[in-house]
Amino acid sequence: MPDTLNPTFDPAVIETGRKLFAQQCNFLLGVLELAQMPDADIPEITFAGRSNVGKSSLINALTGRTNLARTSVTPGRTQEINFFDLGRRLTITDLPGYGYAQAPKDKVELWTDFIRKYLKGRPTLRRALVLIDSRHGLKDVDRDIMKLMDDSAVNYQIIMTKADKVKPGPLAATRAAIAKELAEHVAAHPEILMTSSEDGFGIPEVRAALSELALPA
View 1 (cartoon, rainbow, N blue to C red):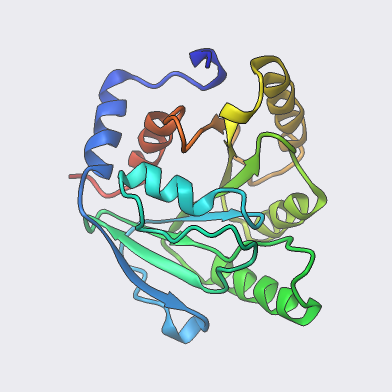
View 2: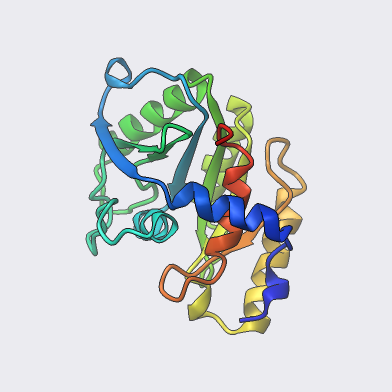
């Protein structure tokens, strides 16, 4: 897959990212209520995306683990916010998947309200990563969560997943279409990163980007 599909990072930053994610990463807890959340005392990043977009697989790939974040072929399985500690330098959270058509409407509304309160209530939240399936591009439910983050003043960055499933030409076209829409969103980070959790494409670049948000070693 062409390296030019991702922005170029300085080799030193790539190495810093590798070292950050080589540290011990531990599951802390899963929460269903704001009162259960751990103290917000170190920088935090969160993963958001449609059900089965590959959030858990990406977290596992970044940390070099196979089962740190649970993956499932059943959409909508994750119904809580899962917290992970990366070497006491970065907190990682995995949000419930959104946009699962078969989920009850009242449950979807509860999830949305929960996510909104989380986004507005974490003072150490440095960035949200909004994962988009490279095969499908932006859907209306993605636009909804992007607007929610705009309204919450949460900086977010698009991470395209499953890039290995798309040929380079269509992949670049999808990336360009997303970039055009991002220009209209005030809280969006301008750089889009493409990844494949299966073959490791883009993983060093995501680690590098996140290392710039973590506490120094």
